[in-house]
Length: 138
Image 1: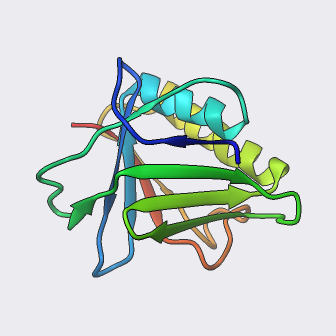
Image 2: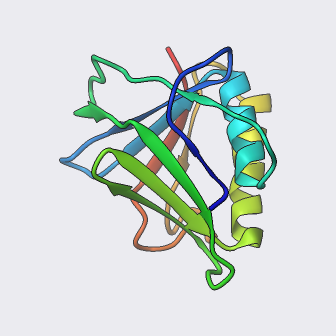
């Protein structure tokens, strides 16, 4: 396991929202939160808080944790919701590609931008993955 993200602290904050109707996830955060998340995907030390959104509209609920797992057997990254957490699991090369996209988005995107991270748009994402949208917290 690379690590878990499960509580809010400091300026590096994320939230994960989930829609049961579509299975879509929104990973949103502060710029610092998304940058730290990218570093965590690369297996580097750090922590990032996960904020619970009491009114996640248009999503149904806010998830309470992210589990990051490196699996040398996988060539892609799987992003799957399990109860109240999202499990992100993949091979090192695929996790590094995902991290690069997260960090580029966090560094270069405008505050109103969003980015879809899903299969087949991103070939490093496994077909069984839940569709994911990255955005900045509002």
